[in-house]
Length: 114
Image 1 (cartoon, rainbow, N blue to C red):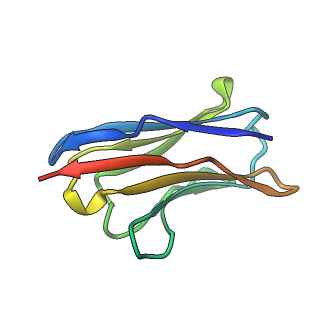
Image 2 (image 1 turned 135 degrees about the vertical axis):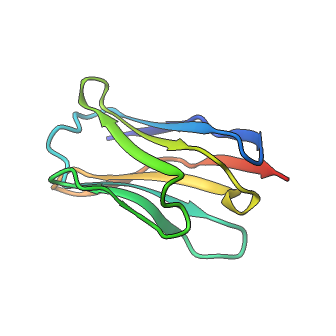
């Protein structure tokens, strides 16, 4: 199974980006999907998740600004990022657990300038 993450880039503070994570396998029966980020010198942290059942969860630092969603027809999970702040600068990774194991995307860099 392969996950292809895309959509990162350089944006000014207050701007928006949408990250995509395309799966080579159907995501209809996944047990968990999440977006993580890793900032320089820090551990990877979970910022948005969608476990089975569809109830989304967010880190306090991103609540109200980031939204995780899915399109089963495209086998893709998204992270809509609005009102971006310089402290959102990080490499963002998607993670999907299909029930028999999980896979990571390759990471996409998001840089927010002040």
